[in-house]
Image (tube, rainbow, N blue to C red):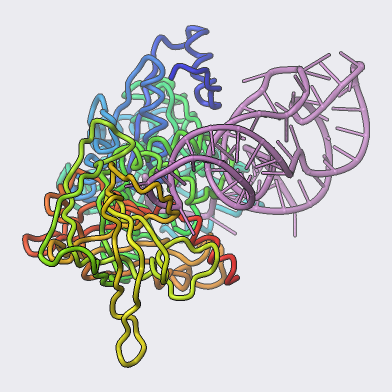
Length: 556
RNA sequence: UGACCCAUGGUGUAAUGGUAACACUACUGAUUUUGGUUCAGUCAUUUAAGGUUCGAAUCCUUAUGGGUCAACCA
């Protein structure tokens, strides 16, 4: 566990700061805007920010960046908190940028008094026009040189609600010729007669991100304010406000956000998928949201492991979904209870097994975990096996059931296929097999070695359930990078419903918190749509399947 | 015709002027009462050109490629 792992670039910076004595301990924060659900990309940021203060002395705050009342809602606050807790992290303080609205207003008046901010009566379009372009300097507003007194009075009136929305803004007086567009007199406050999810109708002016974020960090004495790459140009402004206000010098550091193959990661796109019914909800198991992954059956451990494997850097990357799948499989293999479930049944009759007889077989709940115990599985004369597990004219490498061939029924007997029964149209309806009484699992004295082992279920004892088989949401690796609308590339087979599968009776006692491996099928978890009359399972991920892979290669 | 950020196998991340490595993927083989797991192995990497140096993935220059910036969004 304690093996030396190299530090990522942020850990290196912090390690150095601590060793130099620049800080005695560190403070980080996770600053979501409560206007959407958290996704796997946020998980990276959460693991980073909270992970840093686990690794180094310090703590992490949760601060909602709620400066825009028209898009933000309490519903999102609640889901975000739930997701962070579920991922296994604890914040020191639960904070809101809106907690600082009074302080921020005071900061604004300080800047006005220093001659560093002014009220602009220009319209939004006029401000945009005066801004210039990345290659062209901007122009000063005619309101730029208002007196301090006038600015103070106007800001007060803005605050009091004397002006309509959009009629005036407070701007920082910096440099309209800066090569950094953000330094061209950025807007600090805008008028919005809107009700805020926490401050209600107290305010009708709201600070912009740039005038709220850095100062909020500073108020909380955040030492390392970590954000994504698109905020790099904001750093100059971040530092400017802190310097002019002469407040605690928090510092901003940027890392690259993560993209993943076969999905999309922007809130806007995810919202479209929900609104346009490509998925059912934010927590649809196909969504890359934390709530979607949770419902899909992913574990917090596996997501944390994934984030650690992916690491952090300063370049935008597209990570293979296969890596996330590896992380869940690895964890699920250790904890999932094994159960036998037949999806597409083929009836077999054990002709030499006495009519009406049955017996209980014993099988490990999880061979990877010796403390997981065993369960009993009823065996009888009539069983279901998977249709795929029989082939009338098998290829040489097929080692499942075929006419005259033997296979092991998992945790039960070796059987031999004696006769294939067909209906008038030539469809196979059932198989007649014989079993080897001395081949019982655990006390096999036959000395016969069979290559194939099949899962099965006793027909009279089987229980039924519904199973939802999920696959990647998109047909292409990078849907955002294709021609046309990304939604044209949604995978039409991302959900396959199997309304009735046949399971061994032990599955009757399935619990929501448990994970299951349906042997040879994949990992499954109970879905919240389960009712007393119908169990519903979601497939988290398939098992690795080298046989299927080989078959596929032949087709291609 | 600007400024800023970035460039290491198929993917992701290390190597901090001194033998380019780890994980995933892919492929072989062994084990296996899950074609799972486990184990052993194989393939495969420094964007380019100059420069500094005994020595460069690392430092410098230029080029190339990718990204970001012109919401009263965050």
